[in-house]
Length: 334
Image: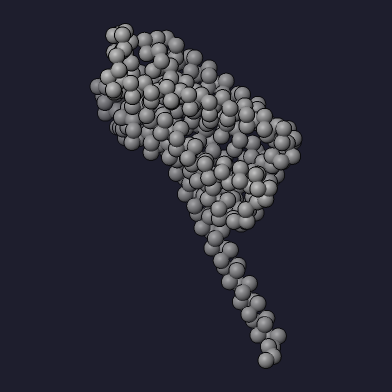
């Protein structure tokens, strides 16, 4: 049977039209998902930052670490997620190459800051349990702020080669985000991974292992000879910030586990997995972690819920907000 050129052309044009429609729908869906994530991340972390900055009352030291995490997530939402919406719709990078390089640099830097901050949170919680009688003299507000300044500066310097032109950033059409190419700098990449992940993972595992071991001992009624220490330890372990901070750390690593596992598999196998949807999901599930933090803090911290409530009371009715703050011993910042 003969097929006329007209019918072949018609089928071909119909197929191309169908592919273009499917491609446009996929791009629109992914761009919409990224836009929703951008709005959710920016708004949620603005609330966290405003909540902690608005009050000058008796904050725990851990709140300054949580503020640092919120600032890092806010920058991620503003300069990484938001910038990816427009290219996701068009399927290509529409900004200058220097912007792509900056996005790649910010990704690594902010991720390193988050990992280091979780390490300091675990150290803070460890000291609160290990030295309950001396904790307030060891972990002061000034010392905490110095550690966070050191963290931001050291992370910015460790990840600076892309800014100096030693590393390239390419736009990934699979994930709709600019990512650094680490293959041409294997030695630097391995060193950076060791410096960031090495001390952080070891500290987190050891510190929370010690904390949960002490929780189990106290609950089981194990004898502690120093009564003053035992009382201070029991009061400290009753603080929900221990479990909340662990939940934050756990959610962070669970969120990034698909991406890390995918990259390790491709590295070991020596070939990339040809599944754009899998790559897209792995990256953006990890970035979604920047939104989960406010949900964990709201559900597990009564103090945070109260501070958020007072923030909105202060915004809606400043006098009422002041009155509520005075009743609980907090001093809102004018």
